[in-house]
Image (cartoon, rainbow over all chains, first blue to last red; front, side, top):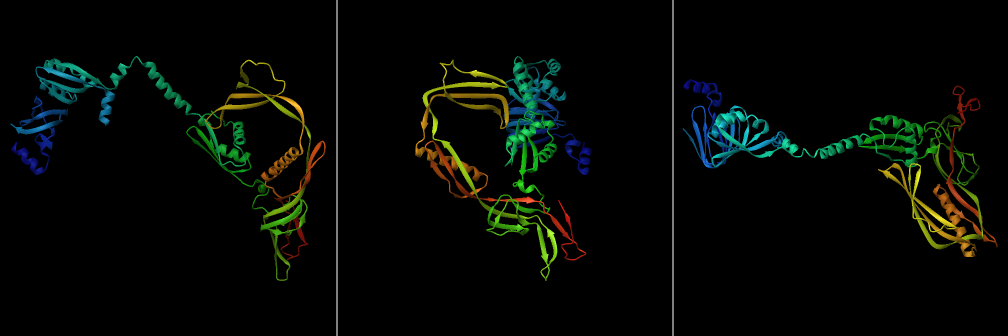
Length: 86
Length: 418
């Protein structure tokens, strides 16, 4: 793992490609794009839990809503309160 | 926008998902590349949109995850078509209307002539129809250059034409030569000007050529007014050289004409009884169809005024249907005699009509000495009037080409007749 990270660093390759890391883009607190995720574990209006390659990602908030989702990208809208990794 | 259109065309359904592990179902969907959108959690259930194509692939996934799906809404063209499947005729009508519009657009429905001044629309349209250019002809049979060439060939007055198809209109642009009479001899060839009428020359403006007469001179019809031969004199006053030009001049010739007209003082006067009758008719092709009320007796003597309204679509496309109206007014004839005043007025009116006709022809009336005389049974108007008109006519000149070798000897020359 360390080696891959170093390689990516040295070769200036995008880390999401090399390490399969999830990419989270948040616009304000109302919109979030998630790329490179594995699947949905839990989905309620208050909480969306996603599985990524290395860990789980949890978005908490109010009125959370998945606008669309495909195999490798999803758009979440709603009032985002907290983003947590575990 | 585009995605919305695609969604509409392909059709989609809103489904509600409930059961044991909906998250697993969602993950399986994305794994099988079934696109879901508009995902919402409603209590313990989920609502989402899925395309028809995707929906048909859901069954195994539903069984595997032991969930249940219910269709809530249906959207898109496939459902819409299904819903209105019983309105086939409506759709057929719409398609028929569209195809009819297309078919009709393949023909010429209006021929418009523009720029014609001395040639009337009818004359040009008549000629075109004799050449097969008609209202209702197929657009692909219109060959602009051919039409242009034919028009130019047939009408000498037309100097330039352009046929243009605009939608279902054929527009013929025409440029006419304004003075056709001057076309007798082409502009670059030598020409003399001779008098077209006998009379006195009152004004003369010569632009090219050698004047042969002076203002105030009396000329006879056919006299040379402006010669085409222009002579170059040398210091001794002898002709050094001569060349020929196309003579051009405005010459006004004044002449007097005699006018006489008479009519009898006794005439038949119509006394209208005030009874009127209007009948209508319709002509379709060669058949005439009378639309009138049954006649209440017939009139012994009557005036009939017939008005016709030919049915036409667009500007010049007449259909073979004519709507007509005849108004009959009954009268009884009775003998009457003009009073002196009436007779004078009548004679004056006739004269002014006659002079007006001359004026329209481009003649100018300078003086009018017509007197009106009334006998017991006849009213006569007679006298002379003086008019002015442009009285020139072109004529091919008799050319004398001086013998260059012999110098200025004109007598030793050849004559060339054109």
